[in-house]
Amino acid sequence: MTRLSLWLVTALTALGPAIWGSTYIVTTEILPADRPFIAAFLRCFPAGVILLLWSRRTPAQGEWGRTLILAALNIGAFQALLFVAAYRLPGGLAAVVGAAQPLVVIALAWALEGKRPISLALVACVLGIVGMGILLLSPHSQWDAWGMLAAIVGALCMALGTYLSHRWRSSMPILAFTAWQLMLGGLMLAPLALWLDPPLDGSLSMMQISGYLYLCLVGALLAYTLWFRGIAVLPSVAVSSLGLLSPLTAVILGWLILGQAMTGTSLLGMVLVMGSVLAVQWISNRPPAPRSEGRKKSAP
Image 1 (cartoon, rainbow, N blue to C red):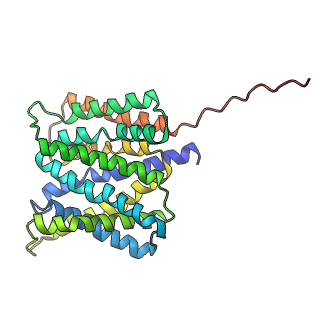
Image 2: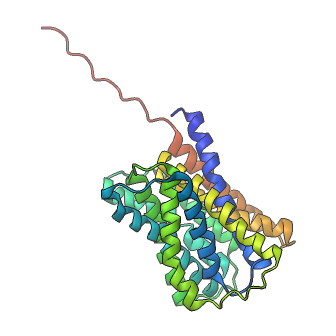
Image 3: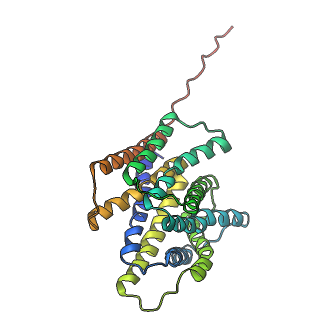
């Protein structure tokens, strides 16, 4: 692919986390309260079924195990741990923990493939964590041990899922690859939705139904298709760093729609996060340096 094509794919992939950033405002302002796992199930499972009916493809015989692992890492375990962390931690603290995912991907590539990290990429990833801390952390943030554990394990699951999705190239088209992960991950969330959440009482308003449809069709079907398309093409570190756009979008929407305060310190954090994301993309998408040819031996 040309560098222009890579940047186009990067821009489309970035739409996924940007869409996910709207999940907070939809959940808190539109959906029924205290039903996080029902929301996660209705977000993922129907979207997977729709994509599967459209693509009509199944994993190859040797890919079922990998597909189950990826569905658990990217959807099932990650969604469950994300909601546990969100309920037990301030949103800013959970987001700062999640901002470490690019560093985890770099560590995995180094440990498993021997790819030494680029110093500039490491600096950019650290700046992203610092910027997220400046943007979202509060001096009054309360640390909860189980919430922190859920946030850390959730970040590890997402980072590992991103890395393995890039490394385990599937023979399925992107739509089918996305469909099976959403459907299987949704099935993993179904017991939590049944056992832990109060049931929906059947009196949903049109606004609440619209909220669930948005999470399913836009927040899962569209966003995850763009995300997995990016994973198939872009370096895993570059894709992982785009995840920082999700809390950034949530902050911007909170400011624009809910009138939440935006200070000079918040703007500094936003600049650092955006600078980190752009730096990682620039480093990852630049063409490799040409290898210098050795001098030709002169004839005897």
